[in-house]
Amino acid sequence: MIVIATAHPLSPPWRKEPLDPNALHAGVWPHSAARNSDGELVFGGVSVSSLVQEYGTPLYVMDKDELVDRALRVKEMVESACKAQGTTGKVYYATKSFVSGHVVSWLSQQGLGFDVASGGELAIALAGGADPGTLEFQGNNKSAEELLVAMKAGIGCIVMDAPIEAARIQAIAEELGITQPVMVRVNTGVHADTHDYLATAREDQKFGLSPAESIELVEHVRTLPNLKFVGLHSHIGSQIFAAEGFLESATRMMATYAALLQTGEVEVLNLGGGFGIAYTESDDPQDLATLVGRIVDHVGHEAKTRAVPMPALAFEPGRIISGPPGVTLYTVGVTKPVSVSVPEGGSATRLYVSVDGGMSDNARPALYGAHYSTRIASRESSAAPALVRVVGKHCESGDIVVDADFLPGDVAPGDVIAVAATGAYCYSLSSNYNAMGRPPVVAVSDSSHELMVAGESIADVMARDQGFGSKSEGAHA
Image (tube, rainbow, N blue to C red; front, side, top):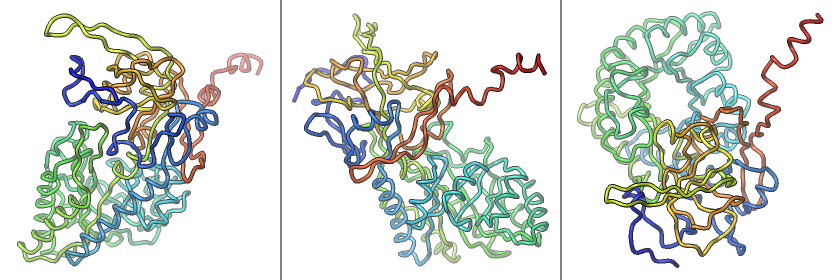
């Protein structure tokens, strides 16, 4: 073990220099993560070398057992907390965090529903075997075509985001001869303690309606013969650690709920998701069972205070299920020490580590200033820690994968490094920037691996381009 006496002047204060830069922080890495006798990382019993040999890098790796276990535990937490308050609880997995046919199949078997927000997510959920009745269709701009497909399939609920949707859904439901359950999304005005771009319940933003507007829309929906109003929906943001935002939003939702009970039934309050996870050792999310219990108990308290029935509750976790089980593997191509002036005078060195992926497979650092943790995955090292910045190969100075962490100072070209907690919002936000193919996604479980989503080659990327050869072919037509 290497003892470091002084902090690195370029390191953020929350990033502690490790005694051992090979060690894995238990709150950040998958539970199955370990080093084998050769010093390389193993996930789900599968070594990094075998994964890289089979699939190459960059590579998304998903620990199936941890993902399924986390989903089941969240479901049990919600159901238990709701039962204690004399009501029922439902969990809808937020597919936007990461969805594939495998994930739908695995989580359907655990009894979860699915929150979909596009025709594509809907198609994957249906093709993956989800019961259409367990699906919620979200979104601020659901097209008539998407709605028709969803309603023909028998979707469980559509969450209305604007008054204009009422007539659109009513017309389709009438044409199909069905009664469509709907909810109304309420913008509670609660400012979650999170990044501005992730706070989706502010007044001046695209999602939802004010409580007063929501009440007005519900009253209108109740007059439409082919719509059945079932409840209210809210979502205050993402990657939230503190309970206060959830509790305040629930208070405002209960006020709207109580007002609507005066004129009709309200079955469900969907309080959304947004539960945060640890991306670095400094992150300290609340125990989820405690957090969920506080929210549900608060709703129960509000119901008693207002002398109204306890509603059924629903939650939409995504990141907390799919984030921690995922890691991304990269191969180091170039390392470069960069001397940086420091305010105290003099300079300090930051080691830039360039890898074969970047913002095309993880856009979150560029979008949100997100921080991640990294370790050498292909070997163990006795070298002293060095402050590194892991960067991608894209033509952008902001192409940063890990802004600041410590790796053994002998990290070198050819090393495979792993970045933790990339299961959520990495593959789902991936792109073909700089004409790079998106990496494959692989599941590991019980010392075996399985391809979940195929990667894209350069030929795959080019295949959509209709310009190759078209001029010469057209000239002879």
